Each structure stands twice: as C-alpha cells, then as structure tokens.
Amino acid sequence: MLDESTSHYREIIDEAARLMSIYFQQAIHFSKVVQLSEPDRRNIILRLLIDNPTTHMPQSLILKKTSIDKRSFDVAANDETEIEQLSRFAHDWAGLEFLTSIKSTHGPHFYVGSLAHKFILIEDLGLDHPSLVGPLTRPSSVENIQKAEMALIAYVRRVGKMHADTLGKANQFTSILNKIYPRALRYNFISETNGLEVLSQLRLLTGDNSHELGNEIKDVLEFSKTPGDFNVYLHGDICPDNVYFQGNEIRLIDFEFGDYGHALIDGVYLRMSMPSCWCSKAVPDNVLQRMEAIYRDELKQRLDLAADDSFYNKQLVYACAYWIIRALQSLHKINLIDNEWICPSGPVDPDSTWVPKENAFRPRILSRLATFIACAKSTGHLPQLCKASTQLLSHLKKIWPEAQNIDVFPVFSKENVNE
Image 1 (cartoon, one colour):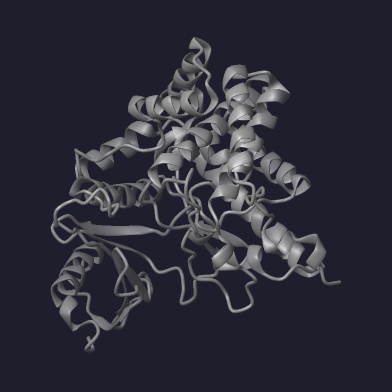
Image 2 (cartoon, one colour; image 1 turned 180 degrees about the vertical axis):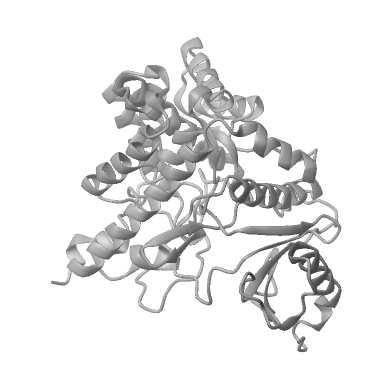
C-alpha cells in the first residue's frame, strides 16, 4: 500500500516486487511501504512489508536506492562525480552480496539488486537503529561505562571476525564488484598523487626536505597498496552509527566504501579516534588496550602472523601513518590551517550529552599526530615521518593556541562520573 509520501516510488517498488517474486519463486506483493530516509539524504531507504509472507520469507525488507545526480560536477561544493556515486552503489551491493555469499552475518542478508534502478534489497534489521553512538555519548556513570565497554567489545569482535572470515577471498569480492560496475573506484589505499600532496605540505610546514621523509611516505603508500597476508575485506567507514545492535550482537551496515585492504587500517580505528566519522572522540588507554587485544585475538584465529609481536607492531605503526596521511589531506581540502571547521553531527539519542557545536576538527589532527608519534617512537619505525610529525604538531599548537587534544567520549569523562 502506497501513501502520498511513497506513491512516486511506484516504479522501483513494482520492480522490487518482481525481483523478489523471482527470488522466492512465487508472487510477492507489499502490504505497506514506509520511507525511512530524510528527503535530503543521498540514499532513499524504504521499508517494504511483505503481504502474507510464508514461513521461509522475512516479514519485511529494506530497499536502499542510490540517487545518481548527473548535474555538472562542482569541486568547490564538494560534489560527487557520477563515477563516485556509481562506485558507492557498486561497493555497497558487492560488499553485502559477498558477505552473504560466504555465509556470514557481518552485515544484513543480501537478496537481490537492480542495476537499472540502482537499488538493493536487503534484510530488515529492525524498527529502531540502536547504534554505538548511544552507549558512547550517554552521561558518564559506572553503569553506562560498563555498557559502553560491552558495546565496544561486541564492535571490535565483529570487525575482527569479519577480517578473519574474509582472508584469502579478495578475488571473490572483486568478481562481484566488476559484475556490477567494472569502472568502480577502489578504496582503502593512498594514491601516489595524494602521497605527494601530503609530502609537499609536510616539507612546507616543517622545512624537512630530506630524501628519507619522501622514502618513508612511499613506504606507507606501498603498505596501503600491497597488504600481503593482512589483505582482508574492510568496511571502510566503521563509524559508530554504521553499527546496528541486535541484543548483545552487532551487525555492520552501509558498505559503500567497503573494499579489500590492510586489516589494521580498520584495526587502529579506535586508536586513531575513529578517523572517518563525525562521531570522533578518544577512548581511555586501558579500554583501548583491551579492545585492540580482543580484535587481535580474532585475527589470530585465521592469521598466524598476527601473533608475531615484532611484525604486528610494525604494521600498527604503518596503519597509524596511513591515517596521518589521510588526516593531513584535510589541512588543504578544508583549509584547516586558517579556519577551524565544525564537523556536522549525526542523530543522537535523547539522553546523549554530545555537543554538536563543539565537534571541531583541529583537535582530531593534533590527537592523531600525537598518537602516531607515540606509536612510532615506541617501535622505532618510520623515524623521519615521526620527526616531521613532531615538528608539525609543535607548529600547529603554536598557530592553533585554542585547540586542545580530542576529548574522550562523553561516557568516559571522569569528571562527570555519577556513582
């Protein structure tokens, strides 16, 4: 049943019914259609309730459609090109179909997709969307801290299991991706162009013109391009709001930037204060150490090298350096040197203590530099990049006197702990 808010989706809903009829080999009709996405979102999300479902069918489905905007591309407005939009769609589809094909529950079950209409039909995970944002942004109390830590354990365990389960299956994923969109962009590596841009910035801001710095930047690029034994399927944006809780278990959603890459690019996500996310804060060191150990234990189940401390710690440094290069790209991209930028915040729960107007970007840069420096110094790897990062951190602190290191998530804020 369509109402005024969904009647203009008649064509794609009819196509969804046709595809699901083929999938289940019997006529499928929808008794109700509910639009879940906001009007200005880049994806259209619909909940489709199946009319009189049999026992081997779900009660409802989620239709996720990517809107392809073919207007002229505007760099200044940060518009996506058509290839970028199609790549997002292709990666989301490919990731979900791939994870379903290996009999995993890391993401929603994939049913079918439509190339012509740019939508996929996937498992409906439930009426609400309980994510990791809630536990991390609630007021600090002993009970809430315990709940947040349990949520983080489920989170890192899910990521670790997904990495372990997808080792050695890159060709399977790539085959699905190429079937959907052969021109799809690939993610989770640093291009030579981006590496040179960051090297130029570092030279300009620190005065370091050494060959060693250039060589170490190249080494980090190579790390991202050739992950070797650590080549796994990465979600690409394991932000707290891309997590869906179902009891004590979590599922990951939104695989638009999912691709194969080095496991520790995701593996240091907490350490680097969730670098791709609007909801970016730190966790206390003792919590971080526990979470990274849990993640590593999952990886060890399928990857013997993950148990080699010397090798693993080197990979950690390079993964942190990967995110440093990504972070330094933003210095130029959003002109962060001259102007602070307040990152737009996503939806939060009613009891959240998240303060959107304080979601500044400069503290993220300072904290990630400090984290990389500490990691590099403790292992002795990438000494020249460590030196340049130390010089850059000192310089940024001078020109950004009001900026402080990033705070911990509200739930871990000790001064606000309520017994």
